[in-house]
Image (cartoon, one colour):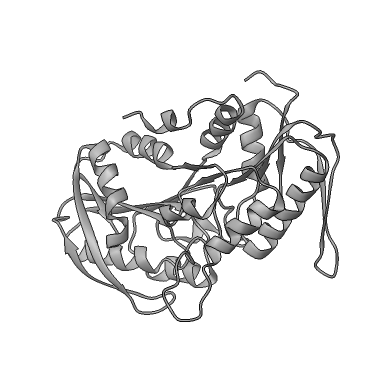
Length: 321
């Protein structure tokens, strides 16, 4: 795209490789910012280039280390606001704390709402994020929010595989609507796994609604951290005669427990993730007993930034069959 002087892209340190890919897509380098972390844990930020009157985008995922990542984002946006940027858009590929979106126990916070309040207080005029764990999080914001989906990127990859007998499977009932949308676009069947969470990282999958026997299972979920849901659902599909199991997740905030489970328990043929979050430090995909594929959402985010800047429709990105 043609570079315009009133358009600037900055990045925090949470996912610099993705930000650099987004900048490449936009045909411009990332704008310069100096970020330091002092020995006592405090963060310092200085925007090197003038931003007065500019349309500014700050790319920062809410993982790894969501507390540090968000604090860094707030400090960057405060620096931009004090530098008189005309509009600040927080580009958050992965919205950390999205799973804490409701008060389901006595005396617990709704942290997803708290994070939304903090983002707005820090100076964001607009938010661009992807595959929220719960769609209602959009309502926590009093500023415009564009909700991207990794679906076009994932669908393109699935169609390239030409599986003989595919079926889309929701690994839990909460993902049934999303899985149904994929099945319609792929023109194949749909099945749903019924599960019960027995702990923070343990899941009991006990029933499959639908016939997966002899099918190439395409399992769709928004994220996996401990691998519990995917592992339980994959085992159940295998027990019901699935020919192969391929899991697709938009976000991959892998924990140490999740890495252990993927190495020893998960009966997948392939796990496909996006680069909304960098791979866990020290994690070696080559050691997995199945194939790990990482797809880039940089073109999707870059195109959304371009269209936002030019006041064009973002919804058109998701209207193609």
